[in-house]
Length: 112
Image 1 (spheres, rainbow, N blue to C red):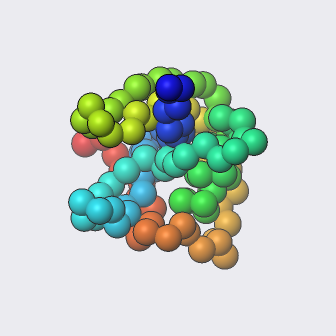
Image 2 (cartoon, one colour):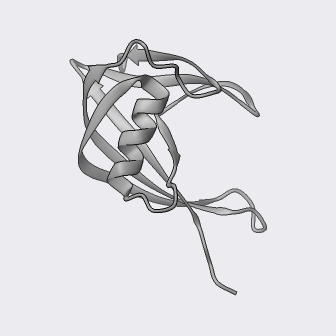
C-alpha cells in the first residue's frame, strides 16, 4: 500500500499589525480560518498558495517564507493531511472577483 497524504497549503498574512482571515461556511458551521486549500495536480506549492489566496480573498499573494509543515490525521482510519504554511504579503485587491464557494467574507483582525 502506498501512503498518499492530502497536501494542503495555508497562508499567514499580516499587514500593519492585522491578520487576514476568511469567514467561511464549513460542515461544522461558520468558522474563521486562514486562506488555505488543496494542492492541485501539476501545481507547485507556491502556485497553489497564490491561487488559494486569490480565490478565497481576491488579493494577490507573494509568499516569502515557508513557516510551518504539519502532518495531521483526525482518527486512525481518516485521511492524513500534509499542510505547508507560507507567510507573505498581499498585493492588488481584485474587487470584481467572486470569492470561492463557502467563503462569506475576508476579515482583517488584530491580535488583541
